[in-house]
Length: 440
Image 1 (cartoon, helix red, strand yellow):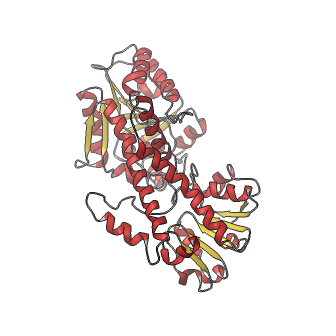
Image 2 (cartoon, helix red, strand yellow; image 1 turned 30 degrees about the horizontal axis):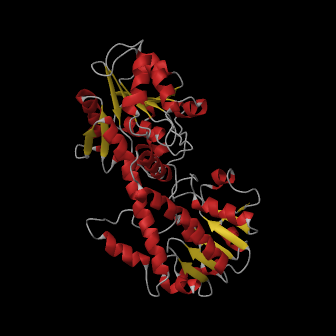
Image 3 (cartoon, one colour; image 1 turned 60 degrees about the horizontal axis):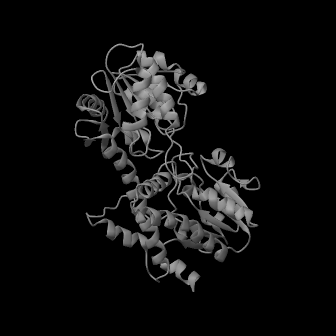
């Protein structure tokens, strides 16, 4: 099939590469001419594991342009994955989507035959069947139906494993204008993910609600695990990993994302949770769980800062890990960045290290924060270390020799006393045996 993809960022580029790997002829569209140039040179425009490999192997079926008309005229299906930034009230803006609908629509006026447009950006309920559909119909001078299909089909992916998530998703969500549009999109997914992939088809608004509802439910599980972590810290002998392992065995609950650690971050979870609360407020419904989840998530900063202040031997603190999760350079809503900036503003000398995200973090960190070039350099410049992101690259470099005489706060319980050294003051979040005395 011939498919165009609008937006070649963190999700668009992997989608382009995965579709090409399944034999489709794909053409990317982006206003960023550097992205377009890199794709046409066979280079991945963003960093994502396996992306460069996929582009290199299937470059004969991939190209890119900034010209909508060129791409639309040479494709049968257009996937749109452009930013929908959050507004002050927490809801998503369709500004960039509407611009894309105008461009796609104007291009469709010069093209004969059926064309399917698929919205993959996260939107507020009512958007696809409302102003997005209106903008597409107005610009194309077509009516969604016989010769123009429209679907809403967001992805459920995690940065750092996007390729894997695209190839083997838990479910496919399709909000469809009509059966023909849904059938075409379902066939693309079956070809990409296999015949057994779970496909849920419904109208636009149900799909829009389901997308943010799923992410909101996941954030609730994360915050619940972090709540259990603090409870366990205050009871001698308690271990949050033992508790969550037992809780997760119950089939009504499940173990996925039920792991205590940092506050949740990244480009999706925080804003989807806020958007769900904003939606409920607008329509006069209650979303107490969403608001409580957000409050608990924000409290994780206070909780960790308190531990640092109460257990620091001096005013030199190192932060290990700045990306919001391992495997990505993204620092959006990163707790590590927030903690580093807070400590810096409150008189601490702060050193930070991350194997991938230092360059991105430098753009949002206080200027006086020291960017260490290695784990060892971060250790040497600090009295207290905080393991924020459990990168394998970081864990491998920690040894008894560099942990000597230090306080190490392990947010993920990834370190052992043997690894850090017998004279290291190792504090593991969620372990009552190491933390309950701090609250007495």
